[in-house]
Image (tube, rainbow, N blue to C red; front, side, top):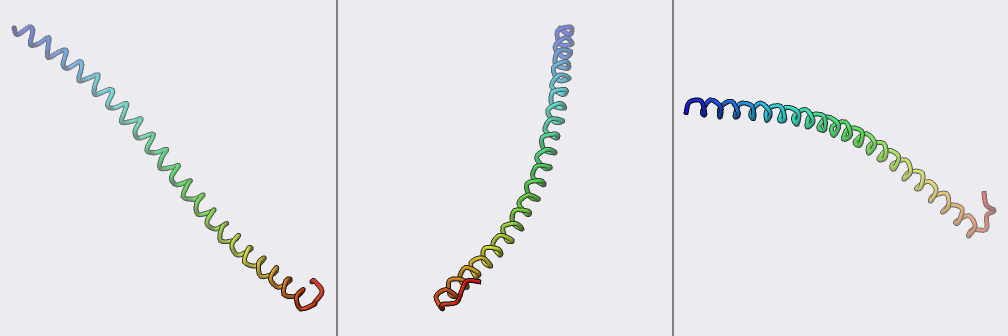
Length: 83
């Protein structure tokens, strides 16, 4: 009976050792994935800031273009030659 209990304990210990190894591997993989996600998130945030700055610049350019077109249209309606 004691022999059977010892053999059962030995098998359980072997299973726990394998499980511990798998858990450690999964933990490392999870850490790598989280690190990659963090880096990707930082890059995405930087790109979004750049896009926002470009959008602001484009908006200002469009506003100036509309003002210029409006001035040209008003000039023609007043009989002035185009600039």
